[in-house]
Length: 181
Image (cartoon, rainbow, N blue to C red; front, side, top):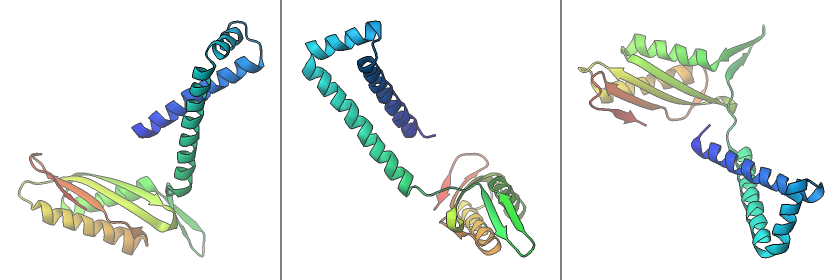
């Protein structure tokens, strides 16, 4: 979960807990809480109403944002499924990542490649590759070859629609890093 998502969920949780405590204190007689809330609402009616309005606005804005994210964020899937005459073949995402890693090592001699795939519905996929190469290899050429290999494997052999792969290649001595988008 990203930091923004954690912050948002935590903020909404705190606001909702405070609103729930307020409502419980108003509806059911809790000895110290009901009297304290009654004193607050009688002694400071304007401050209390503004505070509740701010809490309600925060919860409403975050609720609207969560609805928008829920409607428009692409759905991720964890497996790739092929239907055939005999049955159905399901391939996990991790197996596809490992296979592409082995292809990168065998064909391009990349050192310790990390492949991250994001499978989406309608057979779309995003690819990110981080790898190291020998210091005598050209970073630009190797990055282009890795992007081409990934696109060829995913598009031609698996039938997926590949969004532009991101390939980050750095030399084995870690001095320079190149990103191809």
